[in-house]
Image (cartoon, rainbow over all chains, first blue to last red; front, side, top):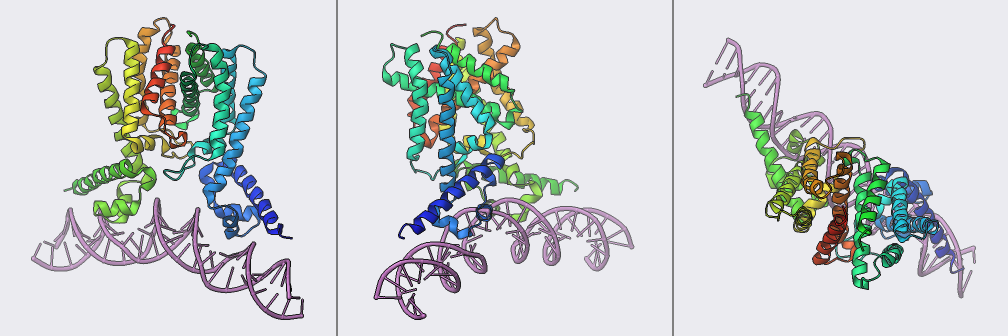
Length: 198
Length: 198
DNA sequence: CCCCCTATTGAACGGGGTTCATAATAGCAG
DNA sequence: CTGCTATTATGAACCCCGTTCAATAGGGGG
């Protein structure tokens, strides 16, 4: 049985990801401890490092799953949205907001994980990000039919960043808590105003 | 001399803030070490804790200074800006971008410091934030004369958050580096579109 | 059944924030 | 000036944490 070790390791790997995901979701990225993971998984402390290079690798694995769920939520919202491209943008952005609010710690972990300086973002990150951008870009192309693809890419990035900023600061504790409705209003304001004058 | 101790402590306090500021500016928040601070300041390790509750308190003091410099830069840009309110918004937002790019680590520290959960943001934070919001709110009131103050506050927050999001993701390493010009373009796009249809 | 090679283990390492028993010092009374 | 005491400063020690690696356990082929 040549694959016996690989099999056992793969099982541990999956197990660790699930456990880390739960921990991050409930207590946040900064509450993740190697020793907790090991004891929760019933494995040795060192076993973690047979399967992952370091804790950051586990966080990246969790983030990949989180990002995927986020993409699915946005896609689901888009599927239920009306045909109007502006409404589609609003619905997707509010789905983004809802996901962030309902998965606050996991969502924050997407951005709080510190990458080694100079290290490129992982493939899955660029892929999921591209997916999100595509969801935004399509309705935008309908609203702004005369823009070339380069301009459209800039518009897409600008809109995503704006919505992200509104959600980020809105959910941030420092602002003493912006009501959820206000966040949705701001999102709708920005998107409607932005798309009102093609 | 009753004030002798207080004087010495105040000097150490200021000294530590300056040293921490330099360290954060050059190497980022995560490079701040209590032992480095003590040796750079020529004081005992424990002396830090005679003057600050913990390292986070030093970071907050540095952040207060950073926020103040940021406010001054934005105000200076506003002073040199044309009378047109829309241009004023664009100029201020690009000053925000310039400040963030030129003081990347210090600027990131403003948002990366982790507040104890449930603890309110410090007064100076709310005050400087209010100042920034006022700078934005004034031109906005000219562009949207018919909105009531509550709506205006929402617009203000939405615009600030949008610009912040564009700068944040634009300067983030994960995006493989958005060119500075593109960031300025996105800022101008959002602000001009947003204000184009009162 | 035994041997050897690989995988697993968890004690130990290094580094970092914070504390606290101790040493130094400053203020004051005689 | 000299003790004496209360206050302040000091840095070794404590605890926590990620990571490593010498030692142990395991298992497959002869």
